[in-house]
Length: 588
Image (cartoon, rainbow, N blue to C red; front, side, top):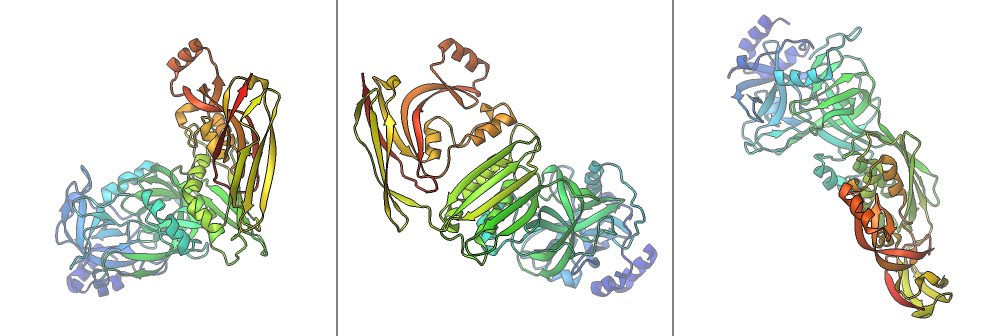
């Protein structure tokens, strides 16, 4: 449809935006529409915005330019303000998920819908990112590549003092129960993700396929996880140039250079709200890679998706067949741990079987590209105990998946959840030594008594042979969980990155934790130690110590700590939080 005809129709139908939109539906804007310079955007201009209301086919709605606000979201970053004059949109305002919907004025691309101007307005307006800013982001992914046979079929930013608020992509989980989504809501909010469980995923849900006719106004999703667990933010395509796609009109999470899956999307419906209307979407198949996440837009290229981390969670409950979750997550150090943890939590807490209620063993196997592996096992006294310890689980998972030494991510992560059949929690009743004074060569007996969870009482005696080197010392005999003994012996739960110097050393340090189940019986001596990358040395000559610490004080440290002279792992397969200390004097 020519510009002259469109201008004629505006004159006749100016007040009837709905009829005008429906008439134009048969002739969308071309993908290669020229850009309208911001200097030519004037108040009173009429335009149309293309977006998907339902399904996958974009439709236009009418707007009228109110004006241009200079430096609205930063120096040199203006915003076009438009009144949403189309009655369909005026009633519900700018919709989350319309982010990136292109604005055309006289057949030229003027900008992309991106900001809510104010909440609870009596007349709805929206902010649009100028077209030049969209082109700036798109230019960061290299020159355009021609698409063989392509046809034109149509067209972390928070609130600031002025009241503008980015229309955040509709981040939705599929595959997560509302209960699990609620458990992670605050964690994701801290990362800039206002994620809900109000969404779906199906590889066949959308008709747009890789290399197919994505057009301005098409719905598109940027995924952070795909598969049985899907997390994606849905918005709208602003501009198509060859295989290059620009969308959203504002940042997704403002991560800069990224490698995120670009996915097809299907809009199920729009849910109107006086506070924030949203699109409900199904995330479809991966159709490309988002490479830029910038202030003015996200941009990427149609084609193969990026490399991701495959996750497998195998659950073996009692009385039910094993079940497995398969999903992949983006390789992004801040986001990956929480997304992986949400999938593991879903596998543990949201199934119809109750086979894990008495307790389970959670094992992890992290495989890295160079053949290094990181394994771990933890016991939990049921799903609720797991939920209560979720913070520790996410923190440990972050340490396993992140690393401050090399740009490497795991090749694969596998979790195995095995039901125990009975609650592993036990209660400590007694810890005593047969004597408090001993000589070298003597044997001291340590007796531990405990009760099973709602079950029997048990008693175990362990012999401690007094080493001649202990003569003349006042020592402590401790009964503590492995994590506590790690900390007592100078190994912190969180190792500062400055203390290590390589990825291999980092993996070795993570693998050196004592077992998390049972208790450790240990004879310890308080003494100053000198550490090199967490490896302790006792009685280092003072000259060596001064030279080393002068060269690198973060790596080489001196501290007073408890050195285990002897230790034994007791009560494996049981959970206790008890801590007890007894003293023993070794005489000459």
